[in-house]
Image (cartoon, rainbow, N blue to C red; front, side):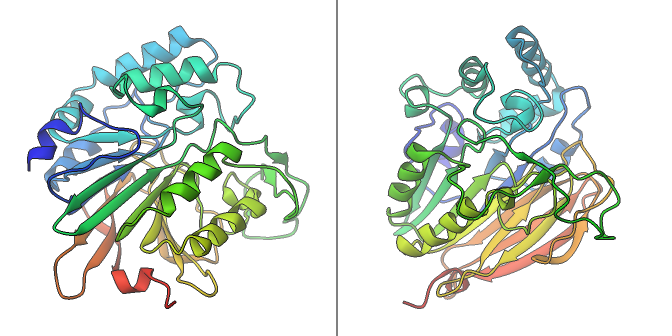
Length: 347
């Protein structure tokens, strides 16, 4: 595939028009630069045609840009990361730990400097719109034989309002064994996750024709409120996303997300159109003690280190996509097959 040889170095912010469509995409988040990152060896065994970093690609956690650069350099020298980088095209967005510090949003004082370091590390061309607009949101298109894949990578940090501290909303729920962090904003609040400019950009992107659309969000989209960081802390923004998908009549949308140090597949109902799936893969090297309650979860969570894998059958009589999670032992732990027709509205 010709584009595999050039995509890593030639990335256009608005679109990539490739000779061939990818049929296999790996993705993940939360990989610590101080750890071996051996899971990249497992990922390469599956021969992905593209890899997507969904954030916490390093653990910077600093306001000192010299420290941030040093940690990126350490990742670049990791032999397993180097092998991935040399073998597979990579695209990326960020989350809090590589943006700046734990759970920060729009008021992080070093966000412009951090952006420059991020874009340089991932070899963003100087012609890219990512250098010109605030934030690092972007989209890519792949086309072949009348089929189109759109990949949208959101920026859930640069414009996001601060989170509200936990206010006892889930007090007495015995499902929770640890300290809860955050409360949701009122549904009517003008608080934002994406910001005005990114929302308008996203609307324009969803109006473009595509058969399948992967939206990469660094934090979980299709989960219920659970006291931790997620879109559910901004219910007005979560609702706005669902309404925008309906308003633009965007077909084939599903989400991939990270952040929480475990994996789960969620299915969020979206009345009058199709349900929104969100495959969370967060634990290239990091692990968490438990999975937060989530009534939208399908099956069981994966607590071991893991990565996500997307297989796309473009040209069969009934095109379909398979959503998978593989753990560090190379065992398939989550599997969900969806026909394209299941990701389409009936009107």
